[in-house]
Structure formats: structure tokens, C-alpha cells
Length: 128
Image (cartoon, rainbow, N blue to C red; front, side):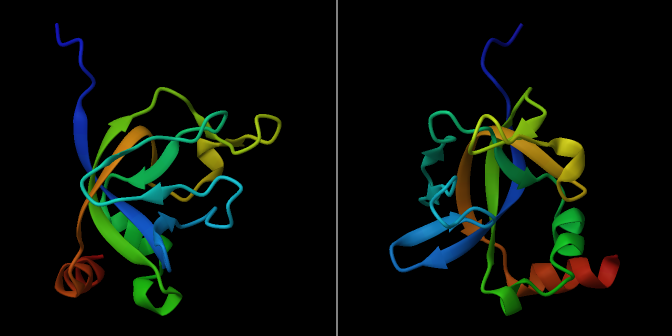
């Protein structure tokens, strides 16, 4: 029996800011998480799990196939799947997984790796 959590492959949307890469949705500081390439990122204290996509197809559908227009960047990542089923930056205002974009996976930890290439995005758009 493996006692260590399994790291899985996925994709993370981030927004570049002057001082780094931040979680896409809550980059206003309330729950926004700063990511650094190659380093483990975990939720802030008293906040719910992080959001990633396990499949590029789901992420592309969420972004309508054109992420660059919004200033977002997509990175490959490794993540540990959370057992929780909601996200929050305020414990009194939880959003259940079922209300998040289709294909969202909740994560207890994320490691950002290389940025997804434009060619990889274009290929996925053509396939769906």
C-alpha cells in the first residue's frame, strides 16, 4: 500500500502579473495564489483546494479555444487530487465542484511546469 499521495498530470490556467503568475479566477488577492515554476503550491490557510484541469480538452472548452486573448497562460502541472468537493476563500462562501467549469479537478497541491505551446493548444482545438 502506497502511503504517499499520487502526483497526476494536468493543466493550470494562470494570469501573469508584474510579480509572478497567479491563479486565474481569484487573482485579486482574496484567494489568489502565486505560483512559481517547479515549486509546490498549496492553498492559503483557511482556503479551499486549488483548481486544475486533468484534460486539455476541458480547459480549451472553458477558454473557448483562445486563451491568449484573455491574457491567460496555460501550464502543464503535476497535482495531488483533493478529497474535498468545494472551493472557497471564505469558509462561509463555498462553491461546490459541480458549479465549477466542466472538467475541473480540485487539488491539494500543484507544481507548475512548462507553458503549453501554441501548437499544442491549436491541435487540441482542432480535435474537439
